[in-house]
Image 1 (tube, chains in turn yellow, cyan):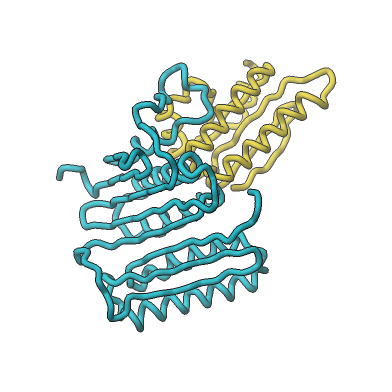
Image 2: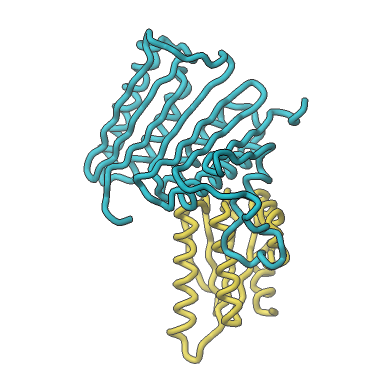
Length: 121
Length: 234
């Protein structure tokens, strides 16, 4: 798994690539937790954290990966931030539908829509 | 991961040349965990493939009913590979159309990758569609994670053992751990609205959703999963 981190204004975008399974799911959790910590401690006045997870190049995700998404959602919402999903491929979409997580995550098919959506909410 | 002990991975394969690829991907993956340089990794990989080919072609004469056994022992700065084949002394009584691949791993989350590559490689030889292959792969990763994390509590001295049986009409997978077991009906339903925001507890659900049949034996320390080619009853 590879994760590229970039910013568009105040929005953090993680481009994730590969297979989010096992130990890599935990590595993704560390990266997201770090962003939450930075938002919590360093910015004055505290800004809410808005994250877009671009899953376009994720071929597979297991229950550990889903758990990381859900935990990130809970932590970021607690701080009044937002996390949305971008470009779900067929495998990942059916996984998220199967686990009934479409009701929890806003999902978008283009980066522009995701940015507009994350600012609106 | 605490003190670094020796890690032993065992693999048992049918003696057909196509399985040399499986050996290769496993060794490649294990070597990534070592401190060997890339050059050395290539050399070790080549040596293992030669040993595997040797035991396949010469000792077992490409008789797929005979098994070849490999032990990969990973210590801090050393990888030892032991190959063993059945030669003349084959005692197997499996039917000819079944192929059995067995794999035993120390319980570390790092090895979930190894499962991923092994299953991907095994499934390449089947005629399951790509979509079904991904489902089986996910089920094995979930069952393996369950054995390593929840069964064996990531104790590297405890083994997770997997056995894949490729039959004409189905793929059967056994996963066994050395833990205390669990009762399936006591595991909460991850689709229950009150559990949707939990960060764990989806593994068994995904396994069951991906496979045609999942059964729990020996108090849950053995999980048996089946995927049929075509529909289950046909």
